[in-house]
Image (tube, rainbow, N blue to C red; front, side):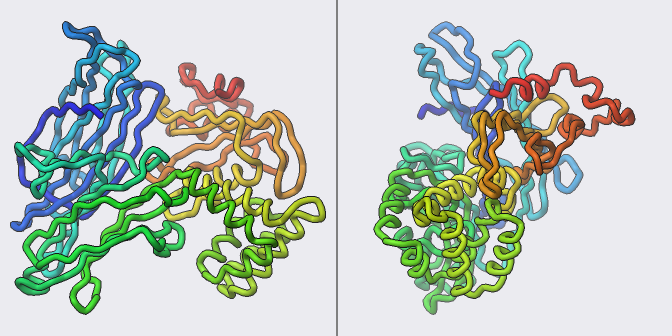
Length: 501
């Protein structure tokens, strides 16, 4: 990966929070992340970085080849007061092969004391005649407590190497290249990360030994995943860094947290930090599927499962494909926390679902692959993917044939339109042809999409769904026969609905 830096600053700054946000629209693709750090003198700061995907940007001819350029505006508010503003242009590296546009990165650093902040970042492609502005709003809370051990955020890394010349990328004698997305595909077989621990010397005592443990946990039930972790022994200091790499080549697809804990000699936990990430690993999933198939019956498989949280998840995820009577039974079994009751219900459900025509365990295995996809793609805040509206539709009707996503259309909330050429309702067994679903995200920070219209029988039907997509546009809403807000002639939702792509 090629990188170009602009607007480097050498201020001393800090963190107890890390956020990863993907910015994608039809013109520009980039990944944003931020991590807060602290100093021994209690001078907090935040490092913000954006990785730009070269192939998503327009190029301009230069003397030595081609080059890309973006304009970035960052404004920071404390409560409602503007405290910092930064507007600048960033040029990518020069290249000659237009089929191999290099990615590049921007890195900024800002001093921020304890408090609550809103960071607004706006980006536009300077090589487009009428570029759209891509915006992102990040809420940051910095809480550095002087009378306890604190940790910085966790910074995910693309790579790191020993420093030869100090720069804004330098920490603890290493140059740290950020990995600005919390998604790890099959091509990534390790997760590298950096974090800092503060004031262990004043809290635990000078020259005391302590342990930093790190591991991966399931994001759904917070259960530790065995075989993915390690520890480091350190001696107390004003600042204790941890820089390491964790092998995830055998980690199955799913949503996880990387967790770091600080423990004293008595194994007491003094501080903890975690960061969310998603893993896609089809090879490990196939291996797990073979392991399932080695169980002869569904009774053998679920009978050997003895983890209450896992059984609760296995029960709850049946909600999207359950009929009305089974929905009540799902709630009863999941809320009971009775492992035997949940096992019996799950086994009974899949045996009834398979009837005499299919293998219940194979049906479960196929369905659970969809559940894993849903938990990766459609999580909403702390709500698991199968309880979200997109996740429910995906599990009940299957993956759509066409999924059109719009993130930055003018005066419009982010929305999605799904089309099915032919769908099978897993809850009722009914079949439908040429059906559509419209979802809208009015809570931009949480990535929570609500279903506002569908032409499938039994789903919400709203022939005025376009009013739900437009931001506070009530132009024409008083006329009950009007289905399209006024002033939306340049919007694309009519075309996308009629011709999904």
